[in-house]
Image (cartoon, rainbow, N blue to C red; front, side, top):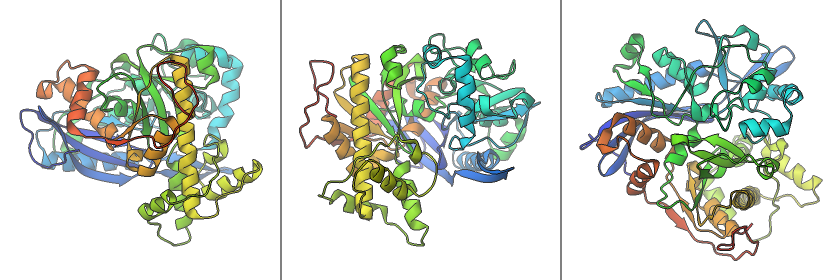
Length: 498
């Protein structure tokens, strides 16, 4: 990706606030007729805060600190680029803040906190799993917002619930809204009507009026509050983008044809295809696939697969002894492993909470009659092989369910830098893998804002036209399969391996 701090040519600049589950950043995008140039103006850590609550340790998000970091980053952005035309915010999905009379009622719970487990049974008692899927089309994940709401003992105190990017947008503008792509991950949005579903709201016990008006990517949320404008040293409207980070990342897949699948690879791996309408069949439900909202009304038909969380949590475990891990050297050692390593089920719930990941992997192997990895390099190779196997199996299932002819796989996000993972994915799927851009989420955020602002002639541009801009901006790294597999996919024109 071209990166520069210089002025834009025949275009303009926007600021993307991109919040991940481990870090956040503020990036200025300079959009012109040649593509997008990015300027990273702020990066800051993000992660769970552990608080003692009665008889348990609870995980929360420090959204107040996030807000301070965001406004500090925007101050730096306006200091370097006073002509910023728009601000857009994206983040991870499902987590929310509760408000009463505009005031936050405590720190939002973290999706890895186990509180949500108490919400699954009451929701399923009100709406069985088959009807639930026919309405919201979502993969069953116990931390889906619907289950979190059902387990939240403070829900009755609130008069508004805002997902994380909507909460930050409210603090910046004073305007309450629910951006539709992120709302689609809650479980309370009807997959067909794309509006809030009254039966699902009732199943979670949501008070009347708790959910705000739905808005779409590209809509203007509102101008900065005067006090916020003074704080950041500039003024620009907040524009709604695909505020679920994967929705923005899929915008920035540099595909020039429609026969692609994507893997948005980071803490989680979102593995899927883009469709015009949801698939709510029994086969889709049985495969635990999800229908999430995309930009321009598209549907992201995908599965949430565990991601590089397995690797990063392993590294954190090894570093707790005081040793600094050189990740590049460790990945090189993993690539050199020639002995067979165990392939484990990355979806096993034992791998969801923070903790000693290598010990959990070893325990899983022992329980399933496999020899555990013996060295750190073997653990890393086992993690990446297991992820690649999960990706391939997921794509084969999606191809069967949708009938989509998948001829290439685009890996975007941080995982696109992991050369071993990309090559293993090509080998396991039997398909070419195109890796990059790394900052796909920020690029998608930037381009939706640029289109809304009419920068560089993008006003009214199609999603495909935005992807063409990405293709002009970045050159993905191509990985070609090096092994032959034989598992047949559903369409006779192509074979997909698992």
